Length: 448
Image (cartoon, rainbow, N blue to C red; front, side, top):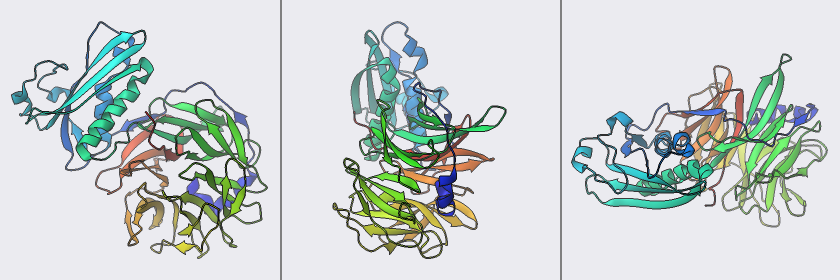
């Protein structure tokens, strides 16, 4: 786990490895559990979508309205009415008794319709109405294949979220993570790198190995992952195309190869190498493989992360005696300035990354012996602890900057949780149905 990278950095290269690659999808291992929301969550009515024609396998397998309700509730900003609280279930284009809806707490009403329009092809329409003014607030139409219906539900959630908050929704995104399972009588560990929708459904296995997989990092276009695998007996950084499964080695230098992070333009990779005898931060130009060394210090430097404008890197270093976060300016030619320390509160801060707007960083900070997710406002250095758990790691911003996904521990098992950046809601839990889940990374926005 990244949390212990400073302590165990130089021992990881001793791990032996074996590899099994799966090309077929696996059943989802994550299940969303809504633990709480904002005290001022906005009630909203999401009516089950009607079907225009006959029966369909999609009709029984995909409940678009249920997915939308789950998405909005998971954000903590909305409190969708329960089905038994709906005074009626109007169809799109049908009559709506707005007076009855005024007796609910909801101010917005979402209705929709699904129509089969060809072989394995469906038209999905939805409309959001203001209950009190009776005016249309949003309306969209999608024509998709059956296997795309779940994604359409997330896209509708994004439209609703954006209309009501004036912020781009992040439901139609992906998460990457590593699951560790003990299998067989010999209790051998199996490591799985997987990608799923932001709600944990539709999991796809990217790599499966009997040895550690670490540090998944998304390319800016969301089409590739860089990660660390120990399948050849030592740490190697790979780059893999998600659509084709094709992959290539990016770094297999002597010593440690770890912590890859894509630059915002996708052309460079920041990474940690110990090929020159000490753990340092480097930049690799992906097309050519050319390396530029960024840090030069006898301490351990690791966990680089790019600023949104690509002009700075932050990283973890114990050059002050304990792990702390530093920032260093870099230019397009790979030349670096002098590192500047960012964290001064507490004697352990690690695992930092920038918010999408570059105004904050999230990190792991140690509070009374417990490792918790925190954020720091860069303008004033103010640190705010967001969680109350014992062993958090790998915080990752949602692409809209409103939530942070992280791994933590529950009764001895690794799970994923997400918390609002202002700390005003309880963490939303993605429960593990099997194994321990670690090393989460939230994808960038997906292209439509």
